Length: 310
Picture (tube, rainbow, N blue to C red):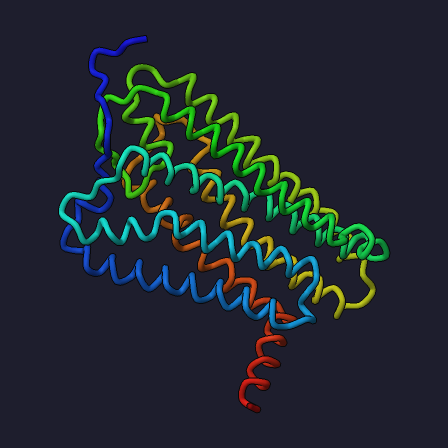
């Protein structure tokens, strides 16, 4: 179908925070500090887990790869956001926009399935402890990890090809990166069927792993409350509550953004929401895990004492 107002697109203009130019230096400073903190915190988690052989278990195997995902996830958007705060006319090329959307969805969906894998690991550890070593072996962990990456790549590739095959009638994206909802605002004609397709995939990619997590933790909580020892209950609940907190933050923001039609899109509100799950959440996740995990804090103390003794 031909559209009269279809614009040949070579690049897009990202409005970002152009409505508050005076705040750009402050926003740049805050975002830069958050981004550097995210890289540092996640990098430390990866280094500490690799250095302490006592943490070479399935749970920390998944946590290591979650930290890798968080670094990649925030690096898709943060550097471009920082660059755009320094230039007068923030732009992104057509191919650059497509690549940004692909990798943002790729790492985001992979994280959804990785969090579900982590809930499965906790379910087997707490509800089926006698079979834990047999079930959560190295091969199973690698298969779950690879499955997360495959699902992420499939959804990202499908969405990116789908969106960028649509005709655009504008080049100004009212957002700070190439997100699906703001790009739909530029698509020519009625996008209802396109939105239905995007929401349907989002339901599978977001709600599928989410319900798997809900089921796993329902069984886990039931098992925890049946434990005779209050110390064992506290230890099990402490580990699981940190994971649940991460899941709530991540799925809550992502679900609100993707599981609704274009008509409900409010640029000012949604930009703040996207900023939260694209930049802030990757920093919160390692902080939540490290502060609430006794084994991990013990590993930090042990490595610190080892460092001071040399």
